[in-house]
Length: 78
Image (cartoon, rainbow, N blue to C red):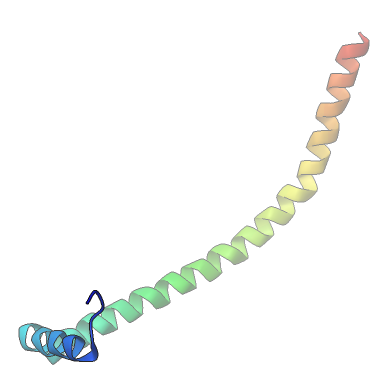
């Protein structure tokens, strides 16, 4: 009773086609596809930039921690 059969989905599809028309639905599909493609391209660019930035942070990060550790040790011995 809670699930919809294939006939229910076909009726919904026919109603949507009648209300919006095939041309408008095609344009919506193209817009949605372009948005998804743009999102994927943006994620690839962000991952590429993040990899280079993370490598720089990792190499500089170890040096910063060592410097902070020396300061703390010097303060405790003073």
